[in-house]
Length: 175
Image (cartoon, rainbow, N blue to C red; front, side):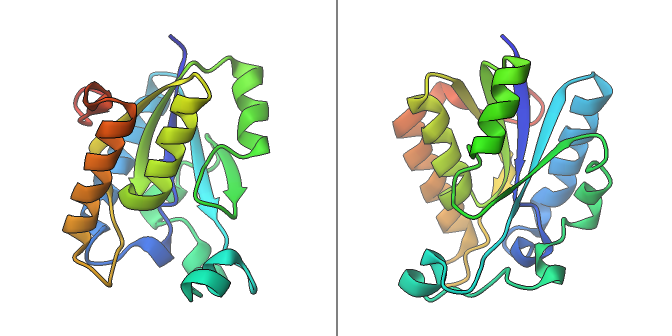
């Protein structure tokens, strides 16, 4: 077992009333992980004009520098973690795979925002690629605004559990 902690999109533009509560949990988890000498990857999502998110969903968030910045509690880890940029739901970009091969990661421990989209896509992608995904349920949240964020988070966990196995859902205490 050679795990990596992947902190997904804990950025100003995704931190809102529905997701704010997990930021300190994520920061604590990342801090403990780094203290133990573990690898941490921070992902930064960038939306761009004409993206599928804009064209198909009508979502134009995270197109400005302030919304793209890491939340302050997580930004402090950027110098000690691997930082990758992504423009899709999944964190498993070509840059991520280069790091995974270099360090031989076998397990992917996921936390961050949003459970019902980017965390879900990354967990399923890792599973399908033959890695062992783990989702830290109390260190994930949804930033949904059209539906209650807590409902979107619960739905995301339900789907993730069905797709990668309910035993892969853990708490921050166990991670």
